Each structure stands twice: as C-alpha cells, then as structure tokens.
Length: 369
Image (cartoon, rainbow, N blue to C red):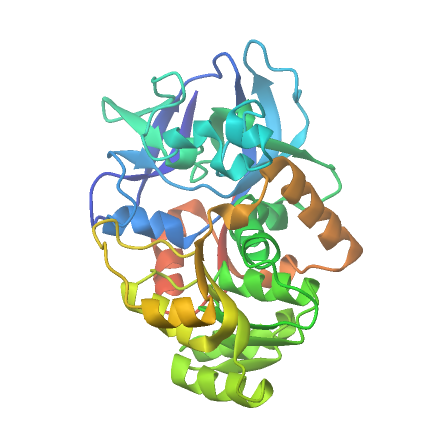
C-alpha cells in the first residue's frame, strides 16, 4: 500500500514527509492504522547521532491505533483490536523475559538496526529500503510491526493519549517505581521535566514520596510540574540542593532520577551530590554514545554507599506495566490528557520538534485522520 511517512535521510537533516510504499505484514507481524504518534526526544537523538541508526529511517516509536491485518501465525490480536505499540518488543520466552525483565528482551537488539526482525524491510521510498525506529516507525498513519511490540488495550480508551504510554509515560513512571524503587516518605529529585521527567514526577507521587523536587531551566515545565505531583521546583541543581537540604535537615534526597534531554557525564556527579547516604541515582536519559567518562566521587560513593543505576524503559515490563498505566489513567490516578500541550499534522512534524527543543511543550503529538 502507499501511505505518507516522515523519513530521516541523514544526520542533522530535517524530517521529510513524503509518499512511501508499505508492504503487508509477514509472519509474526501486524499492520496497524495509527491514531497518533508522540514526538519523543529519542527521535531527535536520531538526527543528532546520539542514537546511531542506519539511514533512511521512518521515525517514531510512540503510537496507538487499531489492528488492520495480521500476518501468518499471529493469534494474540485480531483486526479491530485497539493496541499500544511498545518501543521494546517482548518475546516472553528469552532469559530476560522469563526473569521478569522483558524491557531487556533479546529482541530489543533489533530496535536501532533498521530492518524488521527477519532482516527485511517493510517501508520503501525513492527506490531504497527504509528502516523503522524501534521496529515501529510511528511517523506514518500505517505501519507494520512485530506482534511482540503490540499490547492490546480496551477499546474505550482514547488512542491519542494512549500513544504516549508506549514510551515516555511508562519510562518515566517506571523510572520512579521500578528503577529508583521510590518508597513512601522518600524525598526524590527529578532532573529534567520533559516527556519522561514529568512522568517520573507522577511515578514518585504514586509511590508516596513525601517531597518531589522537579528541576528544569524551562519556566513552563516548572510551572506545570506541581500539577503532576511535584512539591517543589528548582531551575538548576544548586537551587535544588538548597531546597533538598532544608527539607531533609541536611540528609539530602533518597533518590535522584536523571531525565534530561541528554545524559551528560557531568550530570552523574551533580545527581550524586543531591542524594544522601545510601541514596540512589537513576540514569534514564540517553547519553552520547562516544562519551565514556562521568564525573563522580568514588570515595564518597564508598563511604556513603551511594548507587548509580541505568534504566531502560524505566525497568518496566511492557505487557504488564502498559496495562497497569492505562488502568491507572482510567481510575484517575495518573494523568495522560494533560501531558499533551500541542497536537500537529504529520506535515508539521518539524514544527513540533522545534517547539520541543524551544521548551514550548510538555508533549507534542502527531494526530492522524
């Protein structure tokens, strides 16, 4: 079939919205008609090279829609089912899935390679084969994805808001609940209050944190953070340190979650300075692939038993946690609609990313007809 897609043809280039050819689903795959796609910062990392991926590629890895057709062997969903696409596929049988860590599923090795799991391509344009971000490529109203990336949801849930659960919401909430293991009464600092950080704030609130300090230089994000559970806001780490020190009588925070646009090496030391004895720092943001150093005091880590932990997808299990999050939304425990600052047509995708980079959005979303 022919459809439209936003394709990235090279580093530092703008997204090109153009006609593409999309093949039908092969064995173990699903054709989905999408209602919406989130504009996540990770797709900006494709442009900058912080996430290395072969070009050309259809971007987008947050989406929700309706199953149009299924390939041979697919029984988990049928045409007409409403689904969220998880940016990490989960096979359910590899060692990591079996141990309850399906965010580390072996199939995840394919998410930045370009082709589908069988090594072939579904999108084609300008006479070339075109890859798919995270095996998904949600910057197109139609896409073909592995059934391992599909999570069925109830049909009454709004698909535009549900699209954000495939990455940003689950990653942020999971970073607090699973990776940081926030406990009731904790003091938590969230560094960077964008699409993931604002949901780390929600996760810390859900866990019962006493104090949640949201740190961001952008005024809009500081203004909105209390709506999602922040008890205090700060423009930078120094201001946050003063707030946390006063709140805890000098003991400092229990957890710090780094959800900045890029995880610079210097941020590790800054986050460690905000936590006290046995404090945990969680690095959720993507770092530069060629940066191999981080500033921290190993002496202090030993004496105070501080800890630094990485987090992929917020250490969440897609098939379990996506369903839990949409259930939390249904109960009113978790906000999704309020995350969306602006919506765009697909041909406005570059405008949407400009707004994100200028700090004008919590979340931008492409909405399809």
